[in-house]
Image (cartoon, rainbow, N blue to C red; front, side, top):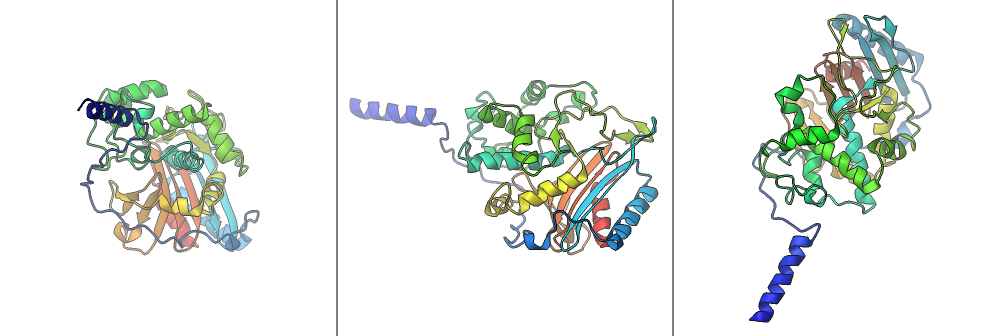
Length: 383
């Protein structure tokens, strides 16, 4: 009897101490998931010409359409790019960095991409998984044992927003505050609130999950998230404009948010991992192309990011592991389907999308409250 108790005691110690101990999953109770798209949706590299600009005819059509949109919607600043199969790359950067100060956008200007940054973060996370430095099943308690349900929340729960952790930006005092908050302060705000649900039970968008992912990546790599993105994402593909902002940083060439022709104070450098990346639209298109053709990760891995697609807040929009799917049959009755990611604040909107039907990759960012998705849709339709 004594021996049995000793054996049981050591078994309990093993499972308590095991870093990746399995926890019985919670049954998902939310809306219907979207079917995983075909594995054949990804770009055929033979159809894309990396160092070629589109023909003068195509450029004229897209330039005219972009300028018409700018005029009709009274848009302050726009950065848009498209990578078109068998054509090449089109790009336009126009408008104002600061309209009150009459500072114009030029070829050196960068735009803010808000939550599109989550696609960059998820790419880095999957790279660490491929290198066996991390597991999708690893529990959050390995790094943050004091977080509620940390023994049940996995890296995958953080990637797909099924973790139940309160999103710090939902806090009313923070939402309308112009004060700069560090990652630790943002995390403390989130953790002062109760979890919304059990991990895996429902879906709820939370910036806190991606802040945690960036902090975990920093601990694994033992360097800043800024350095990690530069080394793993920007430098390999020569994306010179793409970078993570340091806390409190405001680049001189960043197109500022506007409302009624007035610049708006916004903390572009937060939140880490969830929305503090700046770049021009061409580099964002090239980043997504590199991801979709297997330069950062095996294509099978990228396809796996779309295995479980949870319904989001709007009809036709679904969320996988750091990547979104847009089913336009449910949005506007058309046959288009995109994968990518949207982002935005009250006065800044962005989208990075790959049209699975035409193979066009499009990036759009505008420095005011205008739908970037609508602009991207119109530009693709113009083709």
